[in-house]
Length: 193
View 1: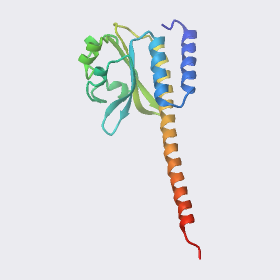
View 2: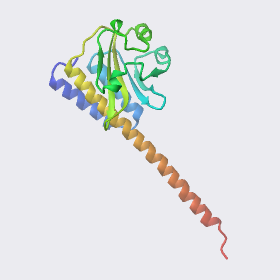
View 3: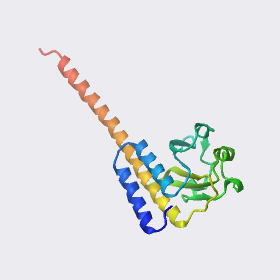
View 4: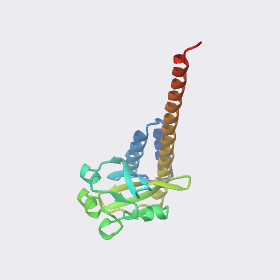
């Protein structure tokens, strides 16, 4: 567990280095989850993107959760801890047995989860997803831990946006190459008088 500001700084630097070491989104998100779970001595984590068209949270990375937990059903943004998305602030549930914000409380209980921290992933004032961290024991989260994880979630937002941008660049490049190839093919096939 992180004990002092030096530990938080060291953890933040480690996660930042891990994120900047690759452009592969899945790897970056897995590194975020691994480091967050390790540094805060938690049990599991999930990163989901908010599909605003269907109002669903779609899992794109996970750590230490069962396939059954992943397959529990669609997670709707307005039914599963919506305050994290609407208020743009972390939601802390120290003991899920006394909370009614979860869409699938039985799935959490079956997984053995007792505590939950849900942090919105924001990029340029737009909520794009949520980082959820679980503990198999009842647990409070300190303000330093919440602040730390909020900063990590922001790094995740940057990584997600960078991956989207890179993906769009690849699509644009492929389209331009096809257009160039078609233009060249037309030039070569055109008979000259």
